[in-house]
Image 1 (cartoon, rainbow, N blue to C red):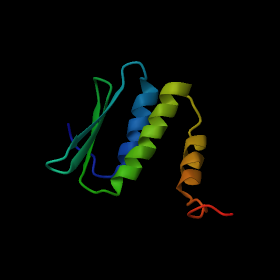
Image 2 (cartoon, rainbow, N blue to C red):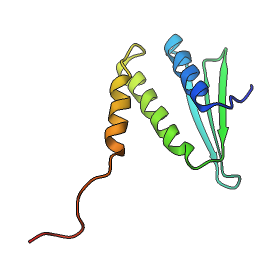
Image 3 (tube, rainbow, N blue to C red):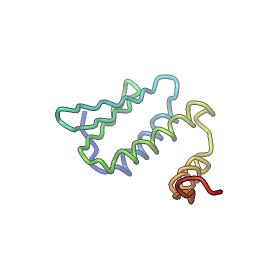
Length: 103
């Protein structure tokens, strides 16, 4: 098992791996607080893809990948992922609600 160093390559290859064999694919996240390391692993028992990070900014990327996998698992491996990406962009826009009540 070799760690993939590029996030984009890991995300793309892991989605391809899941779409090729959704019945036996697994997605595992492991976080070690004492080391501050997050390890993501996607496997189908023949190929194993791993990504390791200690950067806090990668947590948002991991959340987006989770949403992609949730959509693929719920809608099937042929699901259109453009809706997932648009939804993430809408959620990232700050809300304009003020603090307190208006009278």
